[in-house]
Length: 374
Image 1 (cartoon, helix red, strand yellow):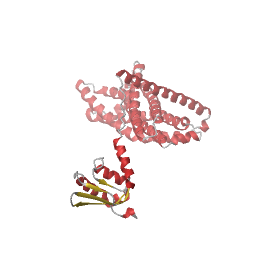
Image 2: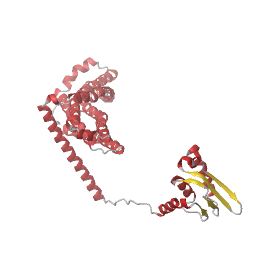
Image 3: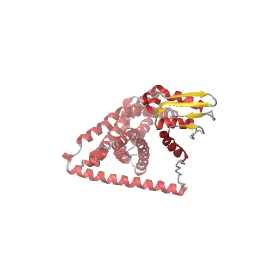
Image 4: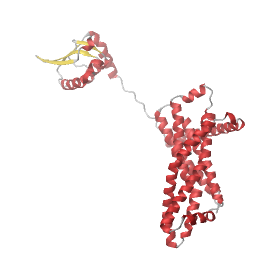
């Protein structure tokens, strides 16, 4: 077959250099055993011979890949002394025509600062509207679940509680103990200087149970479970599973969104209790090492130092944070477009926005309950 003939380049130097291109200049023959690299090296050397005559009449076959290889070596123009078969004229005519076409230029629109600000505002309101719609659909799904509990997604709810709650116990315990040790160590240094060793129970108990415990658990869950929810929904969008569910008449909200939101509302208060306990254990370890305060005395003084209302405020924060994290994660997951770039961008935005909203919500809790629990 013609394609089995290897592509070659020979130079005949009689009166003037004659470069003979022969063989099969097609993609299969060129890429066989790295022939293309050797041919490109030869072509780069021979292209410097400006007065050379090129003879292509001995080509057995030529395709677009072979023609483009020669075309690049010629500097994207025909050499002055070129001889070729009539059947190959059309390929080089097309290459010559394409080379003369101007490259498309996509000018970037010039946006003023006012236009950029307006665009950001419109995007914000678009997200806000989508979030409100998602919240409204969640309320309808919860009402339907309350009316028909036997038809509810109990398996999905149980699985999500396990993934978001039970599987997060390890990381929350580790972070809680370390934060308790660090906070107790720093507090003990200052309290010992003023002779207020006993007040370390008040300081640790109030800061951990009311503020640090809920905040630590919420930030860890936002980074761990929130990103997982967004990525899961985004992958379902990319693989068209959400479209398949719509075709089969399976509602996204009832089967996907509601179980995740309910699971996080249930798991977050439990994780906060767990984080509080671990952080207080870390604080007790550090207090015993630095101040000689026994764990039994620490536990005995804790109920008097921290009113019970602070514990309930922390649990209320947990349920609220869980609701916000789940809704934000689902919101960004459903808005992901069917491509991998949008998936990464949406997951990052979900975590950042969730942590920001959690901090804002914690500040609102601090303002609303500023006179309670002391």
